[in-house]
Length: 388
Image (cartoon, rainbow, N blue to C red; front, side):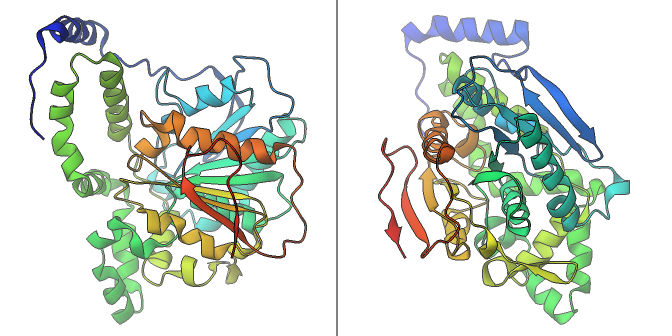
């Protein structure tokens, strides 16, 4: 990247931004949207955001599901660029579940706790608070995978649609796997013992700095460009606020200590169960193919951790879904959800998808799987569906 010095006309704005950043601790307003705790239990806190406008009676409520180990601020990045703020402004009652920080004593938590207990109870409680209306689920990263598995496992849950952002369903195509690819071969030779031990070590709280450093190493080019981005945007208050808020989330990344993520990596990376055969709970198979709700998945065009092919692999796993929309949007793993263009791409696609299914009944029998592939935000009308 070639550094171009600021023009004389931009020096005043740059000086003002530097002064305000120094005096006020930054330019981004990262205060969370007003909310109240609806229910609180072990490993989950359900929030309901306070409405900022008159609710739209036709809009179904939305439940946001972050990934394990991520701060919930990923959905509420900053004032002026917040998915929560956007949903409230559209008239949708908005909820979010926070899984909180895990303790070392939680290290034995298994995948089934989230799929069979935590998320189902959260979904039912949010639906009850919303007048027993069905919800639109929106999950980010592995939170999207857990949301999809939860709905597939229990079709009686009050869920109208499932939307996932940067959620990898083919772990073999994840760049993160490249850093631990030898685990597959080692696991095969040792009947999984060494692989399980290494995976457990990765999710151990003591290893948090190591894991965080490894995640940053995968995005090294972006890390190296960070100082340059600051220099190039000293005059741009909005850009500086976005950079500050994004870096704050990266610093607050939590390393999840339970064995749920260990199971995801051990099962889905080493033997690739999710995209070749169903996941397994209590010795019984959990098939994503049981999911009948309309499904939207959005991949980031610059996502190194969850590339487009890994995200869109879910299209082959949903033969009974009323509709499957595969979308791409600009940005990396976080930017596709909360980047500067998310409002006109990712969020716009969520609005169109949820709006289409707000007042429509899901067919009980679907003769074929309907899949459409487009860029997010590319069209204002419902896209043409292709029957596969």
